[in-house]
Length: 117
Length: 114
Image (cartoon, rainbow over all chains, first blue to last red; front, side, top):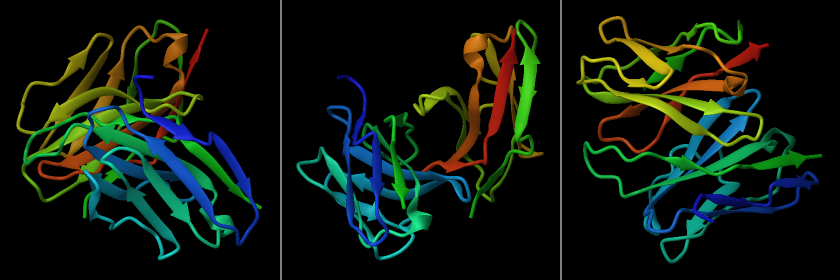
């Protein structure tokens, strides 16, 4: 498809388990972003990739959260030892390269709804 | 740090009427970008309209327009001729001129009634 895709669409996991969420950005988009949407915290930035490097990880809430991007394309967000407060919708977005002062629209995927029981 | 405030948790409007959603923000920067995103029940975030802070002219996109008041740090969205398909959560968002991340408000649920 032409848009950002995410998998799985929904994920239910038990507290303490690890989960991996996947994002496929739009082809050619070098910038990739992860956001989290939860009832308590609203929509918050997690991490930004430019190519395979992550110059901004400031939004990751704890060291249980990590993300990687390989080949400048697919990204995986991993949450270790999940807690109930990790329950949220995890949104991925991609854009053309970010350069100083120039705006490139972020295109969002449909998100992964994570439920930790 | 920048903050974005949407003070209207929910709003409703009759089909074909006009509605205005409010947004205020706080920043010490002189140039930046402001956005309105729409999120329907499908969860897909869609960019509705954007405004560059250095532009004095208010942005418009068909039935959607903004009232950008830089001094007051206000950025409201006006939807004219509301349609049932406009029913969604609307988020106001801020991005620094040299930034890479969006800072979102809490959102406003808009219901268009027939």
